[in-house]
Image (cartoon, rainbow, N blue to C red; front, side, top):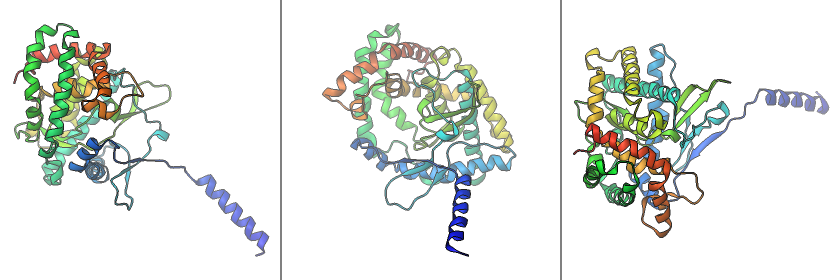
Length: 369
């Protein structure tokens, strides 16, 4: 073969490769530049945990459904690279059309039901996996909030509580729940640390641990406003605990305002229907499947999670977008953070949501401990 013929053949081969090639993009998570947050990540081995969830736990749960005849995916595919640095490497889901819903608007009914179905599938599979194969690796049962983190947690709770109290009189009907809020605040850290010891009488599963709007991605079919698929991201805080934790955390933070309270029981009923359906599919012991009543009992028992949402999640979630905000100003006392925290706890959107959540919690007995 002559040189010109060889060049011609190589050219055709390369052209064919280009036609058959596929561009792939990835998302690489690395440690935050805020020292306090980096310390929390390190103390809790969050990169190791999340990488293990994506590489091992998620595929195992997906395979359980595949073996039962149902295709279920919970999130992106993860990859390993040879590096000593902390990382989580995932496929980029944007080319497949996945996107967030605006956190300021919250999720409408179709999106909430889609999330609850996926959450029920996750809870069902993890509960069945533990039932049939035994406990996960120890770090899934280790405290999410370690003793070493307690000073930072207490500092953050005290700082945020100070601004909540400053703004409390701005909320509708604050007189009715003011005493209860002042009473629960000093107990709050003890209450969330109590989650480290799950009650065996509860229906426990592997919780997402941080399920809110920005940690959920949706995919749509062309022209259809309802989601075709729902994926979870940021699986760095899984914990073995009552399923009530994920439910309270998600429903009180991420739903549209008009649905938040009025549809709460309706959403729980839909979640329970999906949970029971998928537990049965996975051959979970029928006598251990929780009743709807027992799920509501757990929600009442762990109602203080609603105060965590009000104190720590809703302030940044409901704040208008700003380039000036940063994590340090949110969790610590500083001159720069004074205005930011006052804005978080006093803006009209936050006041509206909290003026609905706190009376609802009070009437359920969720502020009494």
